Image (tube, rainbow, N blue to C red; front, side):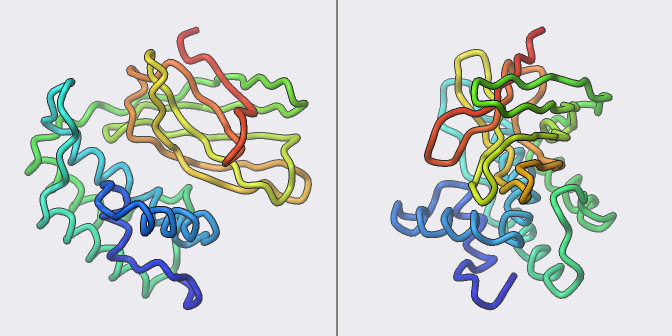
Length: 215
């Protein structure tokens, strides 16, 4: 993480679990959006933390917080990896981190779904932008290979998945290149079988691109 970034590694877990006060949560969200390292670490942590939290939660009950010991192991892994080369969003955790994930998921009683090959989904827009996304089922949720064009350079966007009731789960935020395009590997904790739509929204604005996953 860059020295000028105000976010500490130990803040990311409570931020993802919704345990920070509103003012602190807003400050962390703004800092994460502006820091590539924070964005990458949040995208890597989100499937682990949310998979642990969702493991045994009944449909009508609030999602419980991940066990403290499990969260500390994840945060410890982040701190150890800060000394090595930063992974971009398209990189998955290494063998050691993968082993930790399996142990944590097993301890929390999470039933990991089998991986499935992806399928291509076109994205439509009324703004002149265009793109497509390949969605793939993973044991921890859904992997997204996003390709977009015609966006506004310098503007922040967020990708998401939505279920049949319209509830959305974030899949990551990004800024397009100077040509308005982007090609990203993203991830969301929502399972592909529960998702009915995928899209890209201008942060603080309107939906820019949407795709129907039910077709």
